[in-house]
Image 1 (cartoon, rainbow, N blue to C red):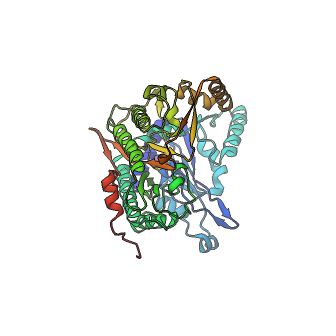
Image 2: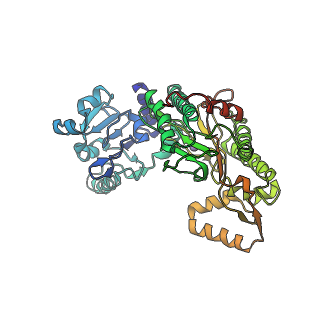
Image 3: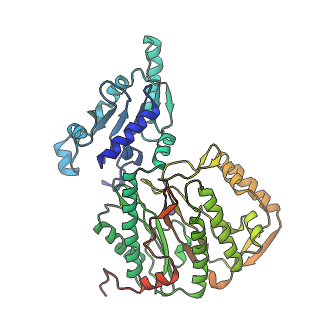
Length: 480
Ligand SMILES: [Mn+2]
């Protein structure tokens, strides 16, 4: 595995050029309670370039430096610390095991930084990564140093995030192998959850069965906190309490995945606790499934995620109108964004080392054109909460424009939209009782290939009859 990191470093070096350097910090540990820390997981950008797993390190990439491009600052070896808190690689290990050209103890960072950056005009750094003060001090030093000596230290800070984002968007063959492994193992866990779940279990018991499969299969951790949402909890998008008792007749929505080689999958399935969908559950499920399949089908080089979102939005809206959940026809429902009462999130996000992976969705204002090696999710959903009726505003507006304005002026954009809605005519629509409390999301991981796409998570069934069949199979783990 180490080779991929060397490849990433040399690519970044050539991108930033020999008049620049990049400073990339590792994550630090955070307190959970008292003297207990949260489980440590390395910063994805740092890991992408180093493969190094310890906290509090800093990588400095100085292209063309006579002492080598790659300088790694690490925690010192410390017998007492290591007995209590675990092994440290140290300066020697940083070179031997992690291919650093030069290695130092992290305490040497301030001394070495100016020396290593001498003659470099620009420093690539992502602000907010814990070293802002250090970078600020460097800028001040640079100004004075230049005034007194005429020599250059970095005086321009460039955001590293978009540069790495462009790189991370395009997965290499080795990375695709890791992503595939994360997807296959995550899928195994979902399959076991379907077999294992039944009424009168707590949600966290189903979670445990799924995560057991992942740990046993060689994944050290999850890609994000597992969502195991039964019954009405499925309508809470980021529900993570997972402590409700599952009831007969519930749907269970599981959005969860594990990591392999730091790559995360991202899978959602929704299935009946007792093994059979009710009529209304199946009706909503079919709408979501039809939308998901329609959204995935155009995925190929040259297509856009935008196109897939539009497809899922349109197909979902048609289904919602058919089921009597929306007051107007399909065109009005789309123009007035009425579908957002039931589908309030995006259809896709990039997938990789981060579950919501790096990389911009637009290039020069236009939706990014997909290329082989790009990976993303497709995850439409319908969430009908317990409301008996919903008041819809008969007001057409451009959602994209609103979201764009919301970035620049969140309170202003919200206020303008609310005022416009206030003035608009309204229609109160009764939510058919049989659909209340049903939440369904179906999510797969899609890789763009030379000729089209691969669904990396299709091993978890999504057709109703296949889901029901798997739900009735004997669990691997059940004690019953
Ligand atoms: Mn997702």
